[in-house]
Amino acid sequence: MHSQLATLANILGRHTATDGIHPSAIPGVGLIRTSAPTMPMPVVYEPTLCLVAQGRKRAVLGTTGYIYDAAQYLVASVDLPVMGSVIEASPERPYLCLVLDLDMARLSELALRHPAPSEEAGSPARGIALSQTTPELLDAAVRLASLLDAPQDIAELAPLVQREIFYRLLTGPGNGLVRQLAQADSRLNQIARAIAWIRGRYTEAWSIDELADVAGMSRSSFHVHFKAVTSMSPLEFRTQLRLQEARRMMVAEAMDAASAGFRVGYESPSQFSRDYGRAFGLPPAKDAQRLRTATA
Image (cartoon, rainbow, N blue to C red; front, side, top):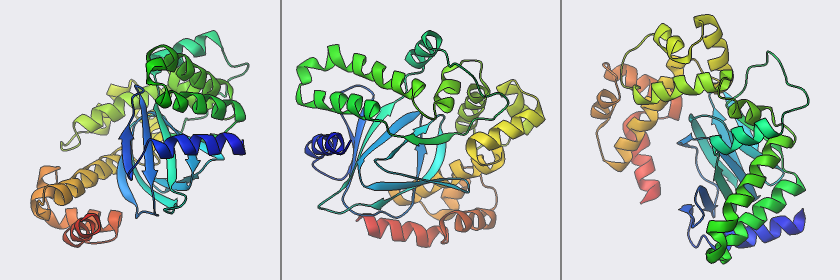
C-alpha cells in the first residue's frame, strides 16, 4: 500500500497548487490540501468518503472525536455539523485528501445486487464511521485520481471507477453504515430526512413531535436513533447549526454578535454568548476577531 499511497499523494499534490478545498474535473470529486496544522473549524460534512493520502485529521461530532489518516477512511452518512482540524501536516508533507460524494442511487443499486450475508439487527447507525483502508479501495482511488492526468478519459471511465469504489465500500470492512445508507427505508435514512428538515428550519422554533413525524418514527425511537447518528439531541444539533452560521456571518460579513445571534434564531443575546462560548471557547466578538486575524 505504501507505493499506492505515494502515487495518490503525488497526484493530489500536483493538482492542488495551494491550500484549500479544490473542486476537480471529475464530477463528485474534490481535493483537499493543507500545509500546516489548523485550528478546529466548523464545517458541515455531507454524505461523502474522505480518503487521506498523507497527513492526519480530527473531526469532532458532538462529544465524539474521530482521527483518520491513510490507514483509515472516513464515511459521513448524513449532513452533520462537525468541528474539523488537520493535526498532521507540513509544507514538505502537506495533508492531502480525496473526497468523493456518495451517490445514493448507485449505492442502492449495488446493495441490491450484492446483499450482505448477514445483517446487524437493532444496532442504531452512527453518522460517521472509520474503516480500514484496503489495498483494493486504495487501488481504485489511485485510478480515479489518475484520470485528472487524462481529462479526455474522465467522461467514460470515471463513472466505472466510482462504481468500483462504491462496491468496495459496500463489501469491505465496516460496511454496515454504507449499507444502511443505501437502504431507502432504513432508520438512517429516516433520520436523514429529519436532519434535512432541521437544516431548512434551524432559525425557527419547532417541537420534537414535529421532527418525529417528519422521520416517520415514534418519539422514543426517534430520540434513540437521532442521538446515535449525530451524537447530539435534536436541539443540540440545531444549536450547532445556528452557531456555525453565526460564526460564518461574523467572520465573512463582519456582522456584530448581537445581529448574528438574532439572524440565526436567538432571542437572547446573553444566551447566544453563553452557547457560543461553550462551543468555541471564546466570546463571539473575540473569536470572530481571532479568526479574521488568522485568515488575513
